Image (cartoon, rainbow, N blue to C red):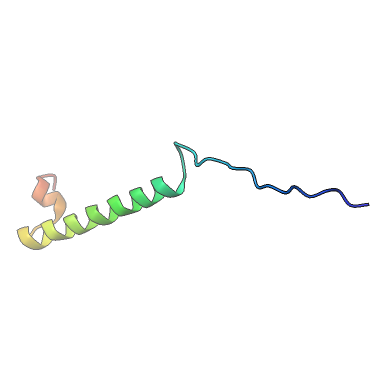
Length: 56
């Protein structure tokens, strides 16, 4: 004897905090923008980022 299968899929909301698709995409995009800005600073100033900030 087989058990009946559900006919509807539950509607589960995306979590507001933690690891979800939106936050991971946003974090990845921010990291890419930061990396490009760092490369631009190093290219235009002729120094590394730490030297440009006066930390090295």
